Length: 190
Ligand SMILES: [Zn+2]
Ligand SMILES: [Zn+2]
Image (cartoon, rainbow, N blue to C red):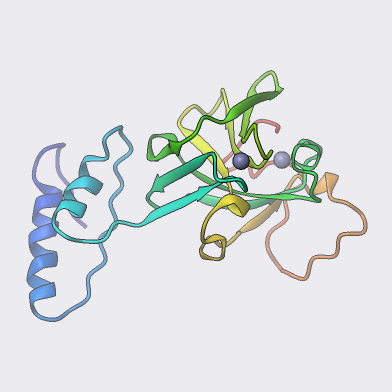
């Protein structure tokens, strides 16, 4: 555990240690937790030659592309009626990220205010659902796992809004099921 003030040199010290261990032939993984715009720690680690985890994705037609730097906080299958209608599928799988880590890299998505407090972004040309944002959670963005280039790499951890799950849908997993939102991560409706 390394603690210290902003700018104290924590990341630099960890990088030195990583370089030392790498020099001994060890494999090293560094996990940064910078939440701000610019991703100072992530950029510093990347500039020292360590590969930074990056998730890319986009819509079906390719007009809209996005990139997320870093790992997801939370992945869940949403069975709510709004996800069902806006996607045309029985449920939608979402991964939550810090909003500062997400960026569109090409194209401009269309926006739908699906409720007064939620905005969904999608491709205006092909209709692929891309993101979900809530005014109550401005620091977070949910991204559709199905629009990612490597959806297999993102593993769901729960089902939410199961009160709305379709009766004919049979699921063989043993993931936790929440009648509404997961109270730990989300506290408002879809
Ligand atoms: Zn498209
Ligand atoms: Zn939903």
